[in-house]
Image (tube, rainbow, N blue to C red; front, side, top):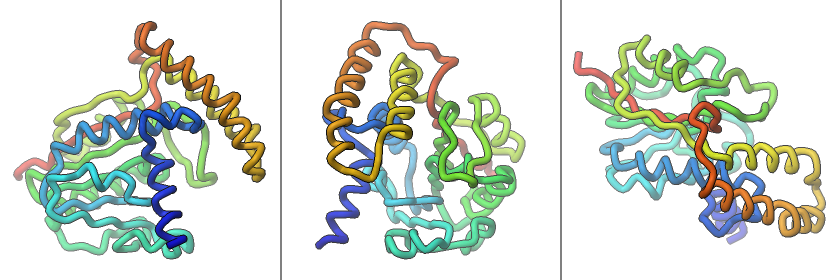
Length: 241
């Protein structure tokens, strides 16, 4: 029971609903979740989620016949017992042309050799299959020291076209003033949150929630800046050679 509750809480915090304005990563995670849900309609068949984490987005992929999650083999991931497979981060343990679709959310920035990673993903993807990826553009360093890159929309597109993958659809995520509010909240979370849950609850109620609420209002009335945003989401397709 405790394990189930903990698993549900992890998924909830990573994919919050619109009422979770007390969360310091509300804008980043809520907006990313909405985009993934939108793009999920393009994902079909047998699906591989590389870096599946808590599988917090699995419920959106209703057109997938089978949802397979894989993670790098670490003590944390093995303890979670959520991933279906583990690997060394280099060679996927699947045969060529095994999957109809591949997902990869907020992982590419942690890959030091992105082209090698994408080529390996392409190998296990069937001809005509699609890859859906999200990756940060503006964000602080995290999961140090395994944080290697940030990608502009142009740089991300270049990576895929370089290995002969066709870009089907590409959008920017959190490109309004909510991007600025999220960066402020990220600073607050990193510098003022502690191991004391009472202090954290106080900060969430009296500081985080008001900032999120003001950000929501400002985001509705102020224009977007498409050059300043938090994340990229891109859908690409493997050509029928």
